[in-house]
Amino acid sequence: MPWTSTNRIYAKPSNTSSGEAGPLVAIGAKAATTAAADTGGRFELSDHGYGKSSVKLLHVHRDGEYHVIREFEVSTELKLASESAYIIGDNKEVVATDSQKNTVYLLAKKHGIKTPEEFGAVVVNHFLYTYRQVVEAKCHIIEYPWERLQAGSPHNHAFVFAPTATRWCEVSQIRHEAVAVKSGLKGLRVLKTTQSAFVDFVQDEYTTLADAPERIFSTIVEAEWSYDNMKSADFDNAWLTVKDAILEKFAGPPDTGVYSPSVQHTLYQAEKTVLEKVSEINWIRMTMPNRHYLNIDVSKFPANVTKGDPHHYIYQPIDKPAGLIYAQLRRRPKSHL
Image 1 (tube, rainbow, N blue to C red):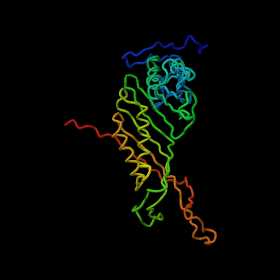
Image 2: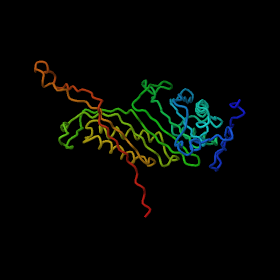
Image 3: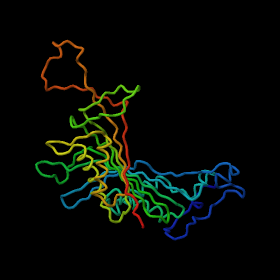
Image 4: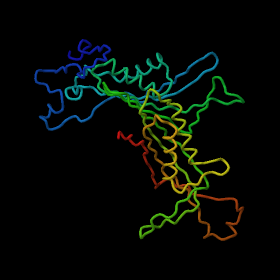
């Protein structure tokens, strides 16, 4: 029987400087172990990988009667040096996805989870250090937004789900290279009822949209950013700074607000604030799709059915089609002159 435990690789931890993975084991004297060899050079496997998706994990830190929770959804992905699992069905170098799931739980138990980014680094480093056949490891983590219940004062062990925005990160590492970290937020839905306009845009034979000197501004913000220095980064503070910068430049002071001449301008102001406040962030990209709220035209109806309190304004929510605005702001490379 070819698929027995005696044929498996029981990899020992290895962080050697050699870039070579273990020798490929061919089944049969003439078996091709790469796509290029299998197809006579016509094709190549340009990318490949596998992993475990959506590993659910709740981490509880108990310090006496005071408890802290963080809930995550963790996905792992490995790329092997060998293509033999694809080409000839040889699984000897495959770290099973179920083993990857178990690894996530065991590493969380052993090390705890301070931040998603740092735990992701622990996970990818483990796979590269433990299995020499792995040439690249990735870990994608989504954090569910729990907040401590406020019952007159902060509750010791009770929490409420508060989905203002969802935090995520992706940590990756190629063997013998530095860890790369990308963080982000999604689902930050905001709306303001004034201090927004869109005027003086192109007017030609294709245009039906009128200038809007006063309009409702609503969007669902997504943002992602990368770090150029993982060792000094404060990941929790950086995420909160990004969220606060978006809300600050969108809303402005509580009593007066802030004027927005366009979604583009608001987006840029938020990105600029992030780079000014968090020196470890190298670039940031935001997406702000318009969520339109259109005036209901009641002019066609008789006055006896439209007359009412002048303080009432009625709008129709429109989600599709929608404008899509995005930009990426990065630090310019420093001149060496």
